[in-house]
Image (tube, rainbow, N blue to C red; front, side):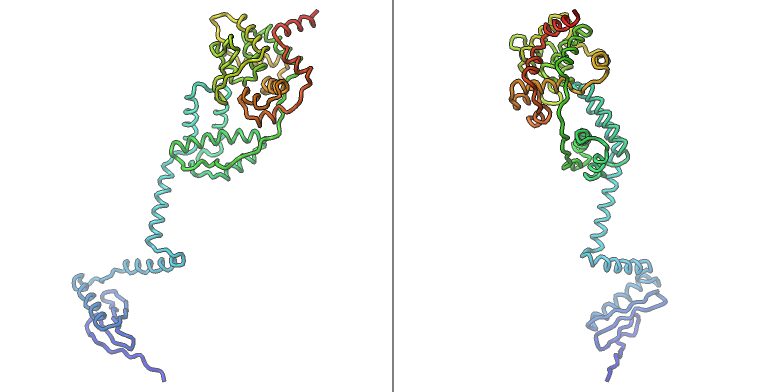
Length: 393
């Protein structure tokens, strides 16, 4: 037989208290006060104390409700939010703290400069280095323009490693050129990190294998014709071209040479820091002859190389000697190939040229016949002039 759940009133005034078989019920339902709540307690004392407390607050607050409607709605919303977050093991307070942290990050992010602004500052910073070659200055300007065009409005921490990797891989260029793009992009973000705008360089972990490459160079007759043209038409550039040809200097290293860098007694040349660290090299006998020839044909008050309009003059040389068909770093590659064939010591060649042994193996691996190798190292000024004189007879 089903037992009825009867209620017995133990408090008649508002809020009423009722006893039932499971405990005590406080009824807080009143149109006058805009309340509609029922609450259960285990003991009569708890129920009556709660009811008296509500009655006292109603007296203090007048006819207005103890809990305004907006508070009731807020409590209801809080309860729903608590339920939704419970499956994640989080509380509304934790959710609010997380969101406030997110808002703070967004505000800080918006305050950060864009990549457009940063790349301009980086470019200005790089130009403060007065030892940069003209080629490097042009490269910085070119790659800065690339970075700005791709990511101008982004913030520095918007970019991820995958974004940069995919962009570079999609460029229709060789891997060696990709490595150069990566080098300057990495250089830029390293500066951004040092300035405190990001915590990690997004290019960390990106790498590209170098392409297989053998350094193309000029054969002996072409080298001889070039040197003869320089003697006849650009005599003040003899030393510059001689060091590119017979000491393997990079053009950027050649333009930095000063008379004080060469010791005529020890035949040792100081190669100033550029793409690689500074180094001392002892010139081969043919290079020594060219240095003497250059000194004898250069006024004492003139520098080792006149940089005025050098780029235009080099362009004329290439046009006259090779009809503009110029091999990039062809003179340096020729030195590396002939020097490796002469001394057969890859480690020494690498130190001499400011390269790694791996680069020497890849670029200068071909074998040169002994007769051709000897002919190259015999191209002294006297030999070049004598050979051209015989051909003209």
